[in-house]
Amino acid sequence: MSNPLYTQMNGNRMNPMQMLQQLRQNPSAFLRQAGLNVPANLNDPNAIIQHLMNSGQISQQRYEQARRMAEQFRR
Image (cartoon, rainbow, N blue to C red):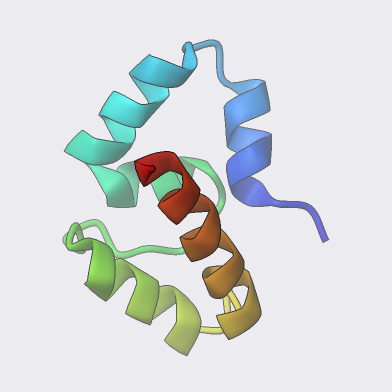
């Protein structure tokens, strides 16, 4: 199973800082471009995660993996 965010990052001509800025400004649009089904009016990160998990687009395991990676960036 391919990772849609990885695909989005590799297929996008923006540099990583531009992509991070786009993700922060409009997370649902960024995730839709990555192939995830996120409602346009959903921009709260916790609500987006809940939607993706409830809809089966991401698993609890994949969420935990991403959360651990994000924690490493904060250090």
